[in-house]
Image 1: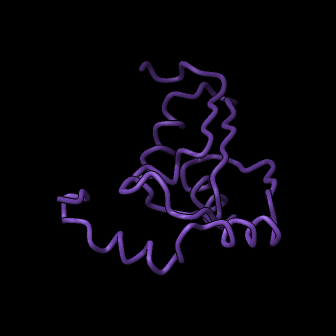
Image 2 (image 1 turned 30 degrees about the horizontal axis):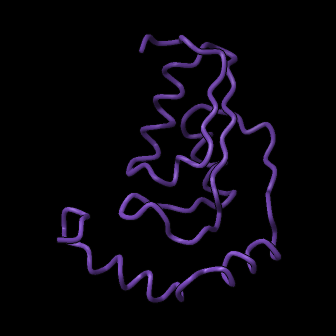
Length: 114
């Protein structure tokens, strides 16, 4: 993709599945035209999913700091959900989160179960 080819980028609920999220920020910067915008959504909390490709959760401070490091200015940030949404996510897990973490630890070094 050519540099400075886009006016805007929409990235929703993807960043947590990328092993190197800072590389994504660098690519956003490369392909955006000057003055371009990024609309990014990512969960601060969500139960593990799409394993083994679910790597990170991002608090507000990470998004702000990593955006600045990648030469982006965070103009607005809207938290979604809140404590009731968090409680609902935890309550709706089919298994305790501690069991999910143990399952992840049983994966082979290449990230797949054999």
